[in-house]
Length: 359
Image 1 (spheres, helix red, strand yellow):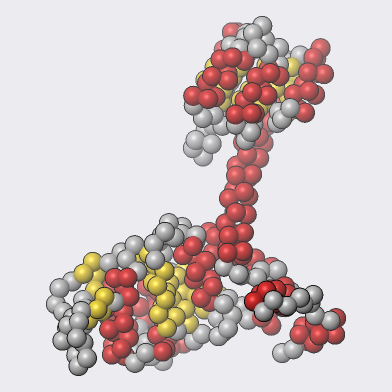
Image 2 (cartoon, rainbow, N blue to C red):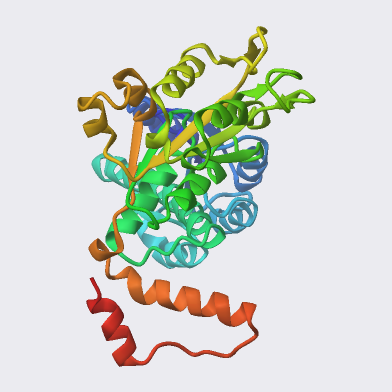
């Protein structure tokens, strides 16, 4: 549909008077109308311009509606086509339905029925496109990133990932250690407009404050003992891509202030340097801590918290999504069996029962 309430509709009928009536009615419903007086003209117009829907008579002096329907469907299978028919040609309407028509209406047309049929056809097409796109995105998330999502909670999380990934919003991923926060971060990046750019990951808990500053921002030659050459930081390496900061709750207050400045200004300075460097980076962070509680205790900057927590994705612990356990178990069996060239079919019922009961 071209805009929310308007569709581009092609009316195909060799009766000029009937076309004129339909033109008046459809325009009163805020649709944009094009016309064709035979099947040949309809096929040419469909190949020349996109339409949201076709309303076509089945009987025309030149190429009839059935043949035109087949040719149009061969060119664009997705376009909904509503066939108009007289009572005497119901057989042709049935043939048209078998050839891919969305629906058929009998003449003289009931305009209330026509309006409802058009609305249903357009909504059906819109939902098909949305479902196709969402399924493709979710399949990419689950398959390419090894995210196992058998439970409703994980499916809901992946649905949200697919929805928010195309935006530029910062994302805070929360959840206990081992729940797969980095996999979710990679999925957000893979389904974003930055997917062709780099994804750079930094574990904030693995480095001291001074090393983390150099790791993120880089340093100039001679900035400190051992700095024998200039080094680019992770922000520069992630330019036009995504920077994933894991365990962001371990960052010192001083480093939090420097990260906040980058988010506010969109630029960094290397350690030992004084030249601002513009960076175009999307920030995704993750933590197993309660940052809200840390803010209340004065251990995490409130302004930074709100900058990072524009979108929150919470990865539930396995105990809250036990439906994932059999699928996860099979996933790891398949992985390690292939890696070690072993043939392992699966778990015994007793072993699986023990896994499901484990707390």
